[in-house]
Amino acid sequence: MIERKIVIGLITSTEYLKRIRPLWDTLLLESSTAKMLANWAIAHYDKYKKAANKEMELIFFQKVREGLDKEIAEEIEEDILPDLSEEYSTEDFDLEYLIAESLTYLKSRQLLRLGEQLEALIDNGKGSLEERIKQAELLTSSYKPINTRVDNSIDLSKESSLDRIRKAFEEASECIIRWPKQLGTFWNAQFVAGGFISLLAPEKRGKTFWLLEIAMRACRQNKKVAFFQAGDMNEAEQLKRIGIYLTKKSTLEKYCKEHYEPVRDCIRNQMDKCEKKERECDYGIFSEMEESDIRLLPMQELIEAAKEVVEYYPCHNCKDYNDLKLGVPWVSYVPAVDPIESEDVVKAAQKFFIKNKRRFKIDTYPNGTLSVDQIISVLNMWEDEDGFIAEVIIIDYADILVPSTSTEFRHQQNQIWKDLRRLSQTKRGNILPLVIAPTQADAASYKAYSLRLDNFSEDKRKFGHVTAMYGLNQDPLGREKAIGITRINEVIIREGEFSMNNEVVVLQNLKQGRPYKQAFF
Image (cartoon, rainbow, N blue to C red; front, top):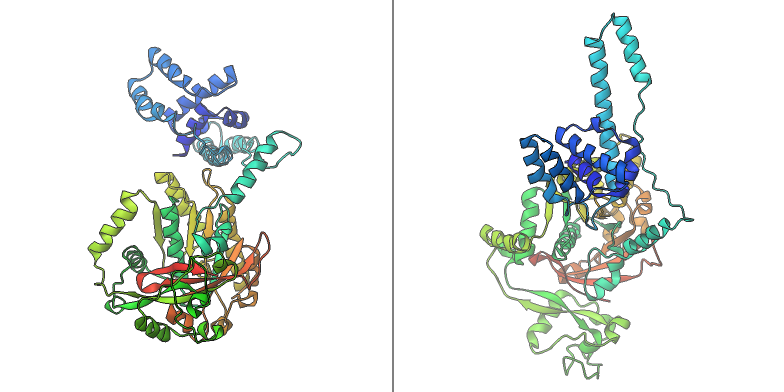
């Protein structure tokens, strides 16, 4: 696969040839066909100082007329030439990535070749053993390794730097996943290429539900998603969650019964203190109550009120609703359904993923076995095998990853977070991925109304590696959990102003596998 990329780069990219030519040695390639094509491309560049591109077809047919082997000619004509106009002439061509990949491969081939030459000298060379050893030492001393370091520096005194500046601003503002309305206003700006986002929450606060919501929304927006399950769930559990999400029905009968789910409403509508013409309702449901009491109503009282006045309509139509943070929950009736069966999920998955050609890869590991290095290895394999390059990489979750080095536990955790940040900063192809990995909050978080910086677990240095961290909050007494409310607040935002008091209220229905239905401020 890499030799194919190198050869097509030699044929189609003048800039690639300029950079690689001073170090080039065709003998380092393994495939005889690759060597032949590379020699043709290099010869054309040496003569004309530009890549052959489509002229390679003329070169090929000239070689055929000169007696090129028939089998080799058929291989080139069927497998190589048809791809030249597509593979590296598009805007997806990433010069720096291909050069770095090429140099690493050529250096490995150079070392293998040196080993083969040394072995041949010692085992089959001429002269005595001492003479052969001297020849091997001479060969070793003359070895000059290929420099695999790519110069990524920017010279701001040159015109070429301007393109890098433009690209930096474009990438910084490229939103990878978008949410609508209030939730979008709250956090869309952080879901960008190269971002590293974490969700901070105690156990059973819905972190995995949110990761699936993020993954599925990314799929809907035609982003390639890689989901690494580090041991919080097994593969069957993960696939069941996806099935519940797609069908909005549970596998368990107790979650399929009739129930009420939260919907957004306005406090002025409920108190009958609105006279705007765009109001949905002409009376209030809690007109005799104080605002502070309404905002603390438990789920059962909301349900009883909804049963009494079936013609009450929630409202969120005016500009004041957002600006003045007038949002409160109301409830809506959800009828009973039959539990989902496997064929329901198969049909839903076929429609959502296969019919719409949405790419979503899941890789599942036992707890305590997955590392960031292994994630990188899998991503490399997926790219080589079928060209899959993830735009969104999700890890469930960071705290159960295995460290790449064996040191004191706290330092191991810091290394994991450094490695995750590196993952978000490393281009693959021409893609800078968005990385998302939640983390466990400390024991004190169970009693906290809203999470703060001091609710970290293990190592506070993780805050220094993320581009954004959000807290998933519910009140300690369980009112919000019973209604289906999660408050998301800013814990840390690297770029721009932030406050841990900034939050958005999200309404959810986890019986349907949906951690996000609506939101309000």
